[in-house]
Image (tube, rainbow, N blue to C red; front, side, top):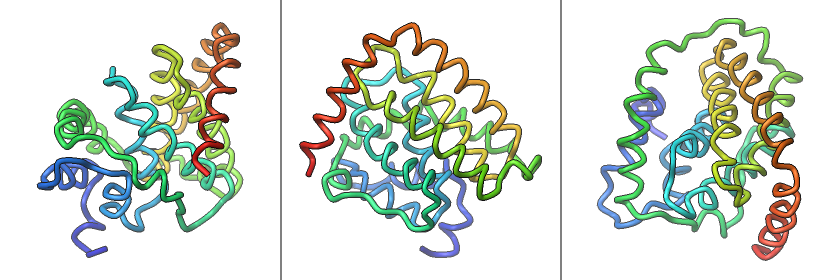
Length: 207
């Protein structure tokens, strides 16, 4: 990864991907562009679009790699690994550009306000704890629950951008939204149990 790409913001890297001439964007394309950036930046890329109403199937495309990445964050891994089946997942370039058009204006505003503060929240234990809650919420994001992925995705995105910028205020927002998500999901528990069974059946089918 060049120094220029390392210095680029998340919104700038998303714009760079959208300038590609390919008809489709794969998970591998996104990971290649972000290179060795922190886990937080990558998690944010997959979680943030799911806060908004998305076309059918997008949560499955973004939710699966989100679960694998957050699991590795939870385990304290420093290098990222994804199976080939996930790296090969794609969405059309037009859909990707549409996502960026919706997301980028909000992301740019957030990036201007982020700065390192309350950094004591980020340590070996704190990072793994955030990774654990994000992994749990990412399972829910992947499941086919109508409108069930917006609040968990918001919480994950807040944790992730906070970790990328070492901003404790973002982490606090993440914890609040995670608590709200758990309360809401508790009301939908029966649907979630059925969806969890479907999730693991799909996951086993990838291998």
